[in-house]
Each structure stands twice: as structure tokens, then as C-alpha cells.
Image 1 (cartoon, rainbow, N blue to C red):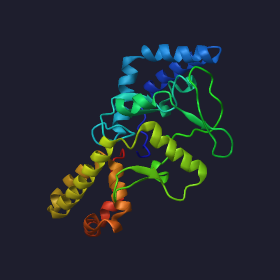
Image 2: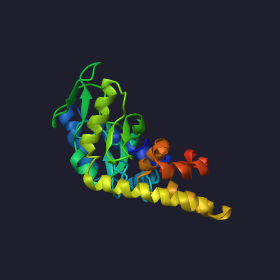
Image 3: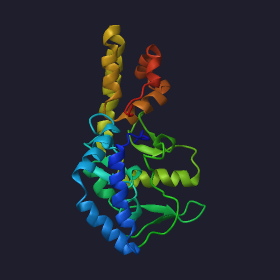
Image 4: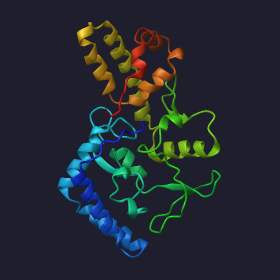
Length: 261
């Protein structure tokens, strides 16, 4: 999971989103707003949301990969702050990303806030106005997950909280790993394969003649599991084979892998 670069829709689409949000906000109380958000979402305008989805797709790694697991097709518009709990964000552009069913399904309406200035976590119940508090789950539109998470590319290919985090930051990392199921066995296997693929691509980049090097770079920059790439780079001194390749191609350290241009 990476911090997403914004690729906003055109002004007409943003205006349409704003009008839909105004309809939700005009309802009197929380249950009415939540109901209006749900019903309006079911009949959302196809034209505007065709543009929304196109922009979200452009923000994805590879060929529209899920913004959470980076593995499966991201074919569902995900409300980072669930619309059933936060109807005031139902049609807010910055609350959207693309997710796959295996990530979006289990996440569903799960959301938590910090109960105080400390690290106490309250998971919000469905159907009632949510308690106030800073969000616990990492938001790929706002937070850089690599500041909270480490992917163990040396052994397990599982995500763990980054060492040295303070209590609140550690709670955010732990909750995000859990609610999104980021350490599913299929994902760990896919990341291990991605590491070997990136190593192979970098080797081919080095062996290619100058006019064709850009083709191999493009393959790396648009491949699935970009977080694997960044962690291979971060731990390259402990990965002899990849580290030697990176020494020969130091420019690869600055490539924008999996990030919108």
C-alpha cells in the first residue's frame, strides 16, 4: 500500500459530486443522511462515475491494481471513510480509492477512532452516529503507509508495524493490517513472486542496450506490488543479489514505481 498521488476528475464531475453531497447533507439527522447517502449511491450518475473510476484507475499501480493489496483487480470504488458511518463523505472525491473484493468485503464498514490523545482505540458500531476522534486506519490518500509499515522482504513477506513507532502510530499500523487482511497467505506468496520478478526485470534493464532500457524501466514502474520494490530497495544491503544489481543501476532508487505521473 502506497500514498496515492491525486489524479482529479474534471470540474464538471467534481461539480456533480458536490451537488450529490449537498443532497445528502440537506437531510435533518444522522439516520436520514445515512439513508440518503445509501439510496443516492445506488442511483449515482453513470457519466460522472465513469470519469471518477477512470481517474482512480490512473492512480493505481499496474493495470488497475487494488490500492490496498496491490494484487487483485481494483474494480470497486471504495469509501475510505465508510459512507454508512460518515454520510458527509459519501460523495467527496478525496474519500475514494479503488479496491478489490477480497479487501473491500472484509473491510466493509469497519472503522475506528482514537478515544483520546493517547492510543485507545474504539471500533465504531454500525447504525449510529460515530463518536468523534482521529481515524485509526491508514488513509492512502493522506498517509504514507511506508512510514507506518514494513514489508518483510527478507523472510516472511508479511507486513509488520515499522520498528520504533510511538503507540498511536503502531496502533494505526496494526489495525490497518488486520482490517484489510494484508497478510493473507495468497498475498505473501504473490509478493515473494513479485520480488523475483523485480530482480529479473532489473537484470534485464542492465543488460539492455541504451535505446531499450526505457522499456524495462516502464515494466518495473507499472508492475503489481510496487511496495515490494520499495522494500527491496530499502533493504538492498541485506539482499546480496538485488543489492549488486542496484549498485550497477543507482538511478533505479529514484524511479516512481506504482505511482501516478
